[in-house]
Image (cartoon, rainbow, N blue to C red; front, top):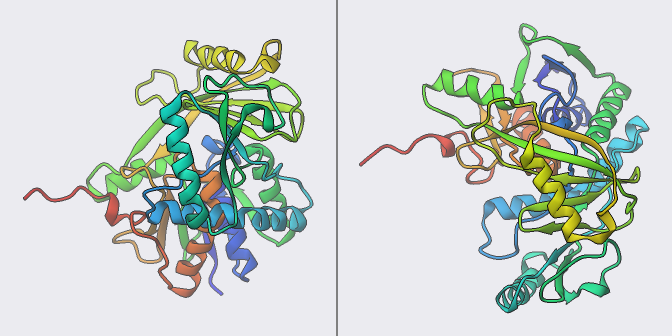
Length: 351
């Protein structure tokens, strides 16, 4: 079988390499900087679904990926002997008022069908869910059992170890070997390169800031409240994130926006009031024009493919995206869902 070069050692590139290697392909991963150099080296690791309503191809694809995630990450851990920190412990969302409660209860009904009995979305009293003490204005929360967590950095290390066990090399560089089929999973730089090649903008970078606290709630569900993620990790830390900044001067600098997130987390749960901050992180996340992941054959480049744009949902989508890329590259079988194609991200001609 011809060699396949995966350009980029973020979660999408490494996951694709793992799925390809499991099917017997000879794979080399080539990274310009280091494993997890971009958004995949962050802190949060929230694998959470979109709300179960107004179902579409993106939500269905994400659901499938979240369901298959436990098996995928178990295989990674078993193959390479390293734990990615995955656990499907669910998620809690405080409800602000009667309108929010009514909407959540309606979604509980649709979840019974859309989630196929494989996970639940329920409304309950805040005291019924074990874990962090939370302030909920209504006294009620949503508790879903589909959400999961992992450690982004441990997941990257686990994938590297699994690839090494299968004989896949990870090299430093910027160019693929001659004659190889190529998957470009190069994050924000890859979106820029694709845009230059096609002559139209193909997305860009959104800065995110996050923090890591010393707070041991490792067996508790994660929390989502008004855009704020609190994700307990397996090592006794808790990740908080994240900002979404389209304009920024320094992509690697943290500032008052992160301090505001930390303050909101402490206000949400008294268990975090005195939790020390272990790390502050900032980095760039690749966002396609459609906000959905973008994959498929690179137009005009025979034997080359794009796998990019996992903005905010890359870790949750990675298992299914890797499978779809393996179908395409190894079997020439196109299972890319509507909205995820490169053509779906091109500007529409004006009428």
